[in-house]
Amino acid sequence: MLKPLFSVAALCLAIAGCASKPEFNHNTYQYDSKQHSGTVSVSETTNVPSEQCTDRWRDERTYQPSGVPQLTGFRLEIQIHDQSADTYGNLIKVELPSNHGRDVVVRDFQKDKTLMLAVDSNGLVKQGDLFFFPEGYFVRAAQPQFNEDEVSFCLGVDRTYVPDADLNSPNPLIRMDRLNVRFIAEPGVEKTYTFGSIQPVSVSVRAVPL
Image (cartoon, rainbow, N blue to C red; front, side, top):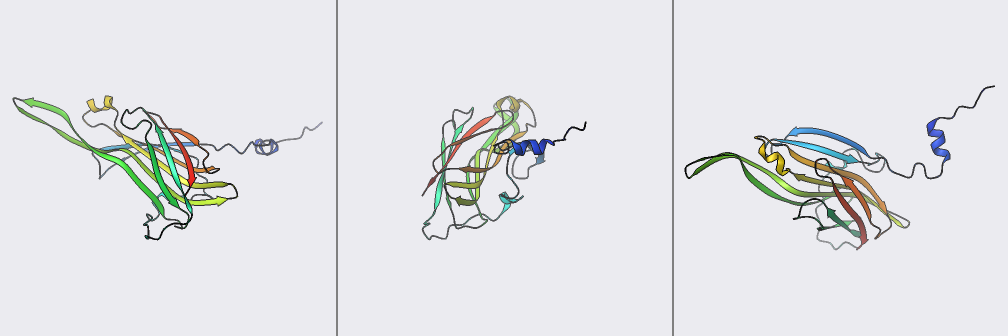
């Protein structure tokens, strides 16, 4: 007697809510930076569906306000939960208008940091290698949509840092932990995302109508 065959996909469709939970992909790569010292090691966490955010949505033209007051849109609020005493609990606020097409709203919360590595003291003279990088957070948001009671948009959060333990190396890696998500929630409802490599970080995100 032949038994019916069921694929995993068919079984998934048969279970209510099976496809409701987004799957996160993780990717790591490195590149030599012309703007920073040395090599940047990127750890990327993403769940961005291609039909909701284009493949290169982060690289679209930067949004430039026209000076005309926005009548619709929302305030994006991102609270940080990391391992840094300087930034833990900080609240990042970004206004995202609804009429800017595919342009990307960007906010740079990084601070330039310069260090001297491999310091060698010769009497009163100290010599070493100058090492510089931007430390902190960089936020991107784009392609907002309002659907009944929900608001959604493409969200990118980058965190750049160098762990203290790596500063003993003559050529430390600059760490960039990157989050790419399609945020979907009711206005004012908070969602939390965790990402990162050497120093995992969580961000709590919500969108409040303007």
